[in-house]
Image 1: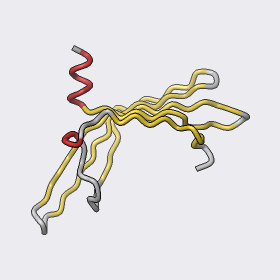
Image 2: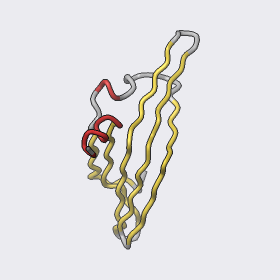
Image 3: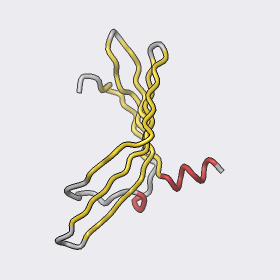
Length: 97
């Protein structure tokens, strides 16, 4: 956790409908289309994250797709996370049009 800056900015642009409900157990997350770039003292990770929850016994199933963006900067010889952004697929497709 030392790599996380004390001033991390987190922006979650998803509505409640576009994410899994809080408190679910057994959620599995996978990353696809992962891109990682380092330019001098800045680093960026982008990916498509799919979250899935399935509880066959209770007849529950849910899934959500989110695009993630993480930014790090190298400060005093160590990499520190300083920015996280989460955007739903529907919101991203609206902004690209």
